[in-house]
Amino acid sequence: MFNYCPKCASKNITFKDGKEFCCPDCGFVYFHNISAATGCLIAVSCSSGQAGGEKLVFLVRGKEPAIGKLDLPGGFVDIGEGIIEGLYRELQEEIGWTPPITPVLFSSFSNVYKYKGIDYNTCDMYFSVSAPGLKPEDLILEKAEISGVRFLKPQEIDYSDFAFPSTVKAVKAYLGILD
Image 1 (cartoon, rainbow, N blue to C red):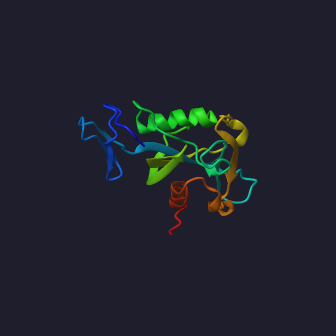
Image 2 (cartoon, one colour):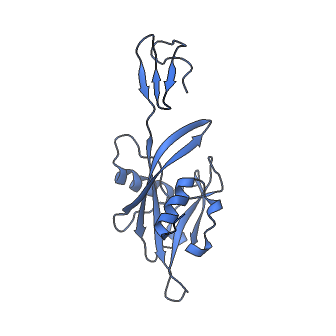
Image 3 (cartoon, helix red, strand yellow):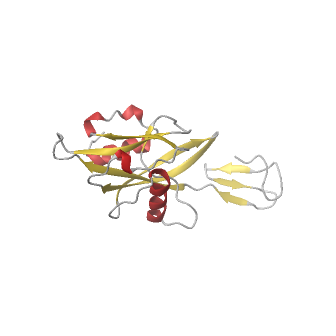
């Protein structure tokens, strides 16, 4: 990631243990720690006139990485935010929606988010919330990042359509599917 020390411009900078940049010339140390990210699994009850259970809300990514693949609403937690605050901000930004109740943390998985040739190691925290009566037209999609929304029953999910392995693990954890 660094070819030169950001402090003294030395070419002797090293990267140890996959997380620590060190410069032996000036003593600079930088820890490349994980980034916190959120995802929210929104469960929508089917109306009484429809057959069977609930649908889950998925977004279609409108930009790289994994353009056109399915994802959950959510994203990176910003500096100065708590995890719930970051989740609420991301839900507002991506789908223009605020949950009627506080989402519940149900799983967390590591992930590698590849962006413009850089691997960002993340700790993805997944929340769930019930949103009876929510419809696609209730959502205001952030067009720069989201190209569509899909409400799917569990049996309609194709796990090869997902953008990230951690999202697959989270959806399976929510549905109680053991691998």
